[in-house]
Length: 139
Image (cartoon, rainbow, N blue to C red; front, side, top):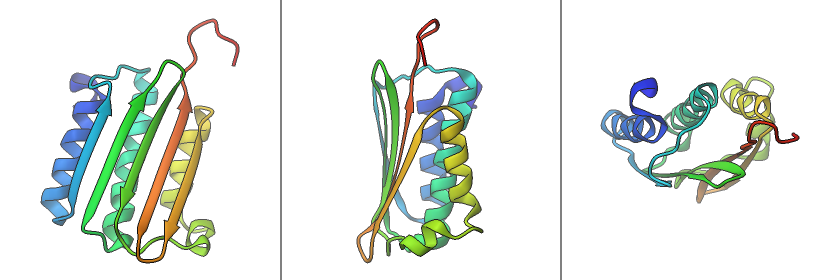
C-alpha cells in the first residue's frame, strides 16, 4: 500500500485501522496533502508512525491521538500527540525501550532528530524532524 498509494494515504489508512482496532480516536493532517519522498525515507516515516501508535495502544491509556506530517522545502516533521497518562523521563531512557530506540535509530539514519515530551496526566508528544536535502546539496 505504501508503494502504491503514497505516504499520506498509508498514514491515513493506518490511523483508521488503529482507531477501529483500539477505539482510540485518531486524527491526522498533512501539509501538503500529497508528499512524495525517497521510497526508503517514506518507509522509515511510516514505520515510525506505526511504532508511535503501538506505544500509545500499549502504554498511554489515551482516548485521542492527533498526528501531523508537514513537509517544507528543507525538512519533514512528523508529530504524534496523545492525551494519555504521559511518559516519564525514566521510561524514555530505559535500555529496553525498543520501540523508542527504533524510532530514534530510524530518524538518526536520515540525519533527523526525535523529541519526546510527556506530562503526567496530559499525554505524550513525539516529534520527528528529518532534513530534506536536494541532490547535489551539501549535507
